[in-house]
Length: 195
Length: 195
Image (tube, rainbow over all chains, first blue to last red; front, top):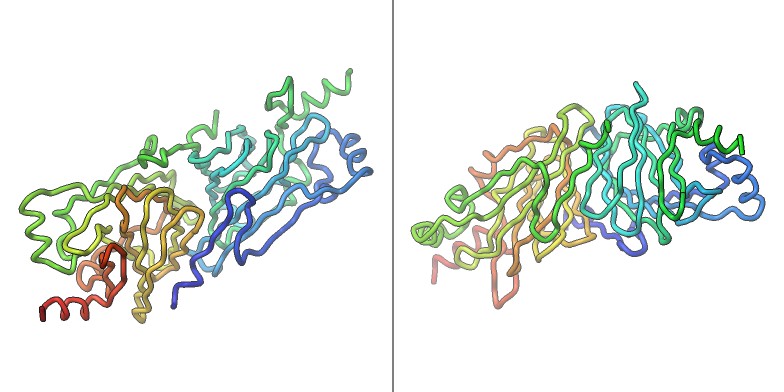
């Protein structure tokens, strides 16, 4: 059966994908991502939990090939800031990506590399988010259950984490009065520092 | 809000997509697709129903850009052969495509352009079908309600219907005893001719 191998399946409740390549990210790998570094170090001194896993399915890495990944991002916070992915640009900057939520409550931060244009968008079932090329993107779980989503990308997109690791996103998504709000990172940090 | 326009939404029950470009295909546009041409002409003499609609969302057509489409394929048959899409190769042959079902019961026929390798795969929720480049593909509704699915593709993929219109797929999917079965088209036609 020549095309059998091109049929895969995933569990929308657990994010498990048959035959996928799995990347797991623990809290210790996200140093520098959370705005409150003291809260981060304090949490890490207690435990190093799994923050998210990404199961990737791709078959080839040619010009027209695609890949997909199912992400499972745990619920939780460091201080008031929700658990998040590291966030990345694509190594091949022109590569776009389409995200669709399956379960849980989440958002994405998008930020243009060139001019810093930025916005938080909701990540929900049946609401595809198109991440254009040259745009850093991070997934954030604002709910109380694992956030499960799918992302489809050109197979040759690749990841560039370095730019984000150095400068981080300009926005933070934090819990205020039980609701997620998006704030300017620098402003928020200066407010906290003055308390 | 710079990224607002990159959030879209679709109704998984109706296939409606906000702000999409819609293509509608009627029975009269599928001459040559169904194996039993007498049954096709007889059906068309009575009515010219909508067979399917495809709502496409894309934002750019550069190298790394993606598009997505939500398809709604009606239930029905011409003779014992289920309603189907015209089927196509991509104009840019290297372009792959990922299909995921949302509602209804369907299958896809995949057929390699180069050597005719072919197979029917189920089109179901949470079971992505990866259509590699250089592979003709057709969607078929084997159920009794509209088949709704999403397809994600490189934005520059394009469509080539001509090769399929000339030679058609080598396989047919027909109803036998209430079940869909896949058969060799030429064999099936010769069997029917001899009755």
